[in-house]
Image (cartoon, one colour):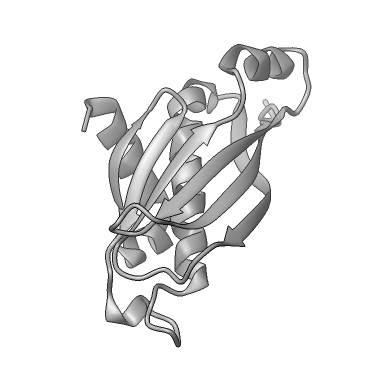
Length: 154
């Protein structure tokens, strides 16, 4: 894992305690993409023996957030990244360790240009969840925004 990816993964785990609680592991982060995984733990399972839907969603949302930070981390002084909507399609019962692969579906220059223009840009991140055999178990699209920070009162 590169230094930048470990920094972003560490930052996310420090600032999102729930991701720590689930034991998320960040394998790679950079260039608008991220890969992370959640271990197979009995206390995270649902009634059919796989990770609970909330675990899958948190894994995917965390991967999308890391992907966003990898491209827009340098904008944090003037904007806060926030997810606005998410859709999830469950494809197959998930079993075992689950891996999330997220990638931004937007160009950095376009998003930063909209921020420069005083807009609140929105953009999508696609996330694929797969099991240990590489079989797709769920797909998500998470829409993010960069909310401009209010100037602090002098």
